[in-house]
Length: 313
Image 1 (cartoon, one colour):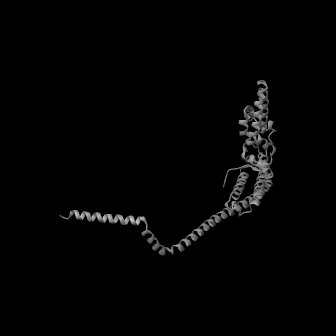
Image 2: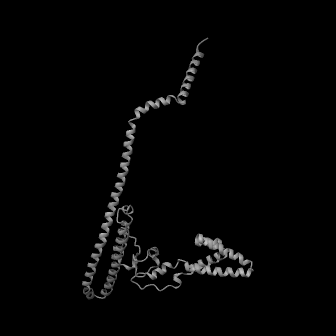
Image 3: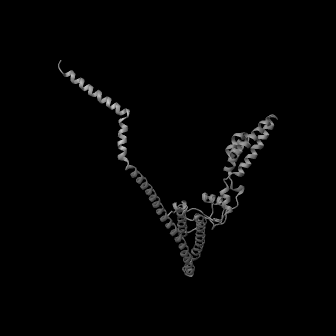
């Protein structure tokens, strides 16, 4: 089982925000805790300010060169216009040029700071607090349950039969994230109940005995929740079996193609006996055959000459 936990986000959250929340788990706060305080400047820090300052100074001085790196071809067009304006300001004196450059640098620095994405995950962590769950939202038993559900969902979504369109991809894309979210939500609620029961019942044996019905109810909920996880795992196991059958089918199709090629090859080899005579005839008329005859004649002549030299005169 894949034991790596990933953040569970409500599928109702927009996809772009879900991806950012999942990819930046360090800035998230457990749903069981108070939401993070509202961040100043959208969560942007000194790093974003320094980046914006350096980029703004550079873009304000040589916009035709720097802006294409920030905004692509549109930035290149804007940079060319701004650069022409800077050059034109020189004709009104160096002081005017410095003023225009300074204003442009300040304006671009502010724009780049506002557009800096450093604080976006932090802002989303504040905005969507309670619509995502992190590992701290679960006790050990609940975390193991969520991880099993996540592993099953990954197996189904990444299956070969799914990629080949043999499963109901649209239904899976909607239902599986919903199932994962519901399991995580119930696990978080069950964890909250169990933590409160442990806290209340830690004072005395008498309190623990009084809480036995509540513990049994929590256990019943846990059993029902795990039945849902087992159903997901059963689906994942069937998907793995389907993947195996799909690979075997692909191998069988390849074998069938090989057999077809072999049948065609065998059909052509029946004509080999007829082709041999034709090939022999062609070979007898090649320059190579004539060369071989010439060499043989020369060798014969050489042998004859050698024998004649050995005979006494």
